Each structure stands twice: as C-alpha cells, then as structure tokens.
Length: 311
Picture 1 (cartoon, rainbow, N blue to C red):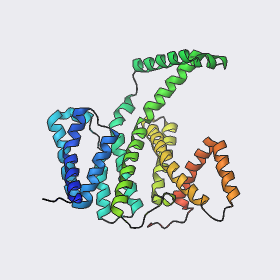
Picture 2 (tube, rainbow, N blue to C red):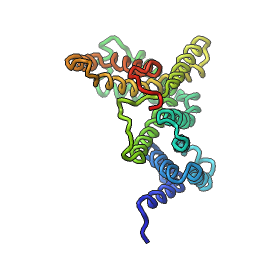
Picture 3 (cartoon, rainbow, N blue to C red):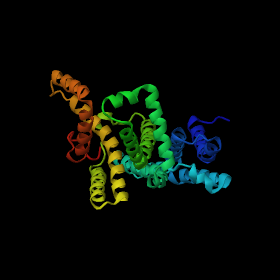
Picture 4 (cartoon, rainbow, N blue to C red):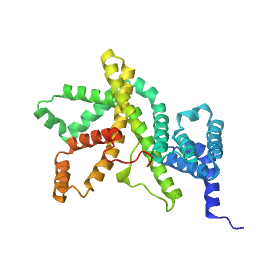
C-alpha cells in the first residue's frame, strides 16, 4: 500500500507528540533540540489537521509523561511547544504574519521563563556562590590574569566583590535568558514551517521583518517597572523590569539590524557613505549595538521603512 510523503509526515509528527515528552525525560536529553522537534510536530499536525487534533496529541504526550514519571516530570518538561498551538490558531484565523508571530512568540517566551522564576527569586545560596567565586579566582591565578589585574590596582577582595555582583545579576536575569532561548526555538520553527507551507507564495525578506506597533508597550512596561521598583525598593518589580528590558534588547537588536540593512540598500545613499557607516560600526562596535537596539525600538512606532501594517 502506497503512503504519500504528506501522510507519512503527519503520522510521524503525531508519534513525536505522543512519545517525545516522556522519552526525552527517560533519556535525559530534554532541551533546546527536543523542544524544537516538538514545536515542529505541533505545526505539522496543526496546519494539516487543525489545532484541536494537534493539542490533543501534545496533551496526550504530556499526560503520558506524568503517568510514567509522576509529578516529578514537571521538573523536566518544557512547555514552549504549547505556543505552537497559538501559532496554528493564528494561521487558521488568517492573522497577519507579524501579529501571529508576536503573540505566539510572546507566549513562548512566557512559557520558557516561568520554570526559572523560583530560582531567580531564590538565587544562588551562599555556599554555591563562594564555590563559584573560589574556582574563578583559582583559574585567574593559574592563567596569570589575577596578577595582571593586581598590577592594574584591583586587589583580590575587589575581584571577589565584582564576581559576587556578577553572580547576583546572572541569577536575576535567568528568566530573560530562558525567554530568549524560547524565542529562538519558536522563531526558528516558525520560519521553517512558514517557508515550507508558504510554497511559492509571497515571502517576507529579512529586511522587511517588523512587529506590530503595539509591541513597543512591552519595552515601556519594562522601563516603567524598573524605575518604579528601583524608586520604591520593590525588588520583584525591579527584577521584572530588568528581565523585560533584556528580552526587548535582544528582540529590538534583530529588528534594528533588519531596518538598518533596509536603509543601507537604499539607492539614495551613496556607496562610499555606506562603506563608511559599516567601518564606523566595526570601530565603535558597542556604541553601534546600542544604537541599533534603539533604532529597532523606535522603528516599532515610527516605522522608518514605511512598511504597511498588514504586511
């Protein structure tokens, strides 16, 4: 009996949704690659058979994990693939691409960050922090870096204090790091699936990538939470603001590069000036990164490329 490639892919995607959650836990390999495969399967089943059937198979896979490993499975499972269901629903409702991506990716980021909130609130215990600091100092000594830093007027006590602050900052921004990883997972699968199902239809080049204008309110919320939390000494609100700003820094960096490349392609800009701008970007790299982030942020509202909202 002949089975078409499309039918075989559909059956394989269902098997992935049913088995991969508990197999990933059993093999100890649940992670970025595993969630990408599950997201991919969610989109394949959803685009061909509907969001309800995709949700059924994905939920069955998670329930199977709970049946096999009990409540402890929740410590290993990632829930980013659930955001794929919203993406499928948006496609079925004919949402504009940028609207569908924004809300689905936002859900993916939230689902990716939630499991890390408890750790971010607790942070590293004192013993673990001291071990990390001690190990780092030993590495500095072995490499000769400690001696170089001492010659610059930075003693070991100051280095330990800087390392302690770095560990505290890292623990604080772990949710935003998890959210960015979730965005990478979802964005990669969304890109591949859309290219696959879009066929020969109109394709959006990188230089025309853009989010809905109201996406800027997330950045505004992050800045407001940081300022309010810092002013009133509300550590939770301040931490929320910092994490939102970190996530938006990564997102607007991509959007800023997209808008910047679009403007560099303009025939109105002389070629000599284009090369001069690129050279300046390399010389003042850090300043250029910050400028591109701000450019991407303001492009959400100002729409420097004059792209239609429905594009």
